[in-house]
Amino acid sequence: MALQRRLVLAALTVGSLLCIYILCVNLEGPLSWSVVPLSPVPGTSSSSRDSEEPLDRKRHGASTFHPEISTGTAPHETTRAPPTPPAPQAPPTRQQGVPGVSGSRTSTRGPTQATGPTEPPFIGDTYMTEDIPPQTNCSDGVGTRVATTEFAGRFLKRVPVLQWANHVSPEQHRRLSNYPGAHGWGGLDYKTLEETLSVLNSSANRQLLDDWSERRNGSECIRCAVVGNGGILKDSRKGKEIDGHHYVFRTNGAVIEGFEQDVGSRTTHYTFSTNTLMNSMRSYAGVGYRGPPLSQETRYVFLPDHDRDYLLVKAAATHTAVGRGPERAKDPTRYFGEDVSAEKLKMYHPDFIRYLRNRFLRSNALKTRYKNIYRPSTGAVMLLAALHACDQVSAYGFMTPDYKNYSDHYYDSSYHAVGFFINHDLRMEMSLWQQLHQAGLMRLYMHQ
Image (cartoon, rainbow, N blue to C red; front, side, top):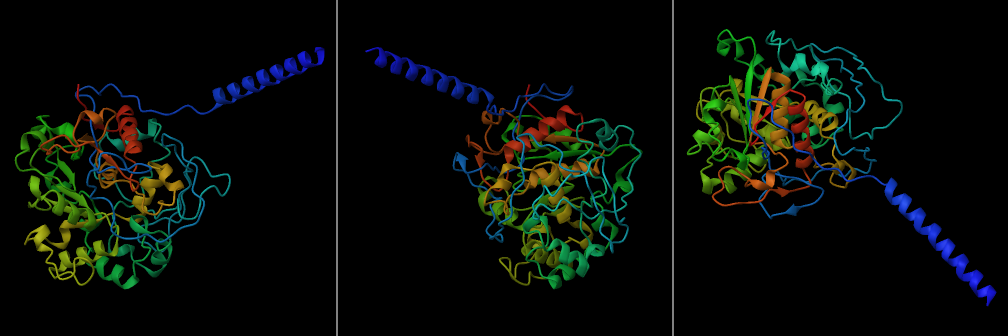
């Protein structure tokens, strides 16, 4: 009997110790991360939704159309993906110039250096650099403010935003062929690349804000409005404020007619990929989207996801039909108007898009088998490009923590929940917009 009591006592003791151990392990585990809404910057109102169509680790929530989903297939990668914190952190700030490019330097080192080979090869945290003189001497611009913020180590001011004729060389083609999709020239043959970029050969093709000298009108700072398509803009009455900026950026299914009071009427820069353009024209025709905005001041900024983007640029610049691919024999003036010229066409540099992914939006999607199709959303590229080119940036219609209160788009006739897809990380983008707003690098429109 005494032996039985001792056995029972021993079992209870072991069980108690085991419970205490499990409890301690659980208490030491990582806490879940959530975005905390910020109070608005003075002069704005509080909370919103994003410019883009959604992402997540998997499709989640409402079954909504996503014009960003690519119809192509990216090459398979088997390399190890990098560790990713929930909120984007600054990766190593090493930057190396690429010889053989006009205006580039050979090497620049940032304030910190990687201590070991922490990056898998497909990340490619090395970029072309160019000497790009500022267009203004604005004392209160992004370029001045960023040095005193948490983003100081992430902003690389000498990575070219746009690619143009002087960037083409066999050496550059070999280097960028290592990166697929929007992040490089992987799968793009040299002849197509050379023929396309050879028509983007003027200073207007090199500069995002090519006509600043004509429109500055004595202003010391370049003011840009970047307009997403989020439902928060419905009944916002922000149209006049948006149109009052020097430049107005829009993207994808930007329906303007009938919504001018809320979203404005001007478009100076329209950002898209050929894939998102065609999908938007099919899916948003019923709400009035007929194609890119057409005006004398509008520039068309391609985000090159596939060779079809290069083919359409060449056709538009030369006023010829598209030579091959999904848009074969199509007339580009159908999309960009009869008076479109090469000077009105621009194309993001793949180094710039890869830099945005690596330094600002390093998502956990890069740890999955979908890492080759993950990229910053088109709206994110547009907004971050504006932050690299403009002095003062106001963002409207981008995602904020209470996005569930608004329909997917401002032109939806009934409520449609935001859908999430693996090719973008809209929640990480939402967090980034909050951080940039809090740092005073941009003003994010939010509801009060």
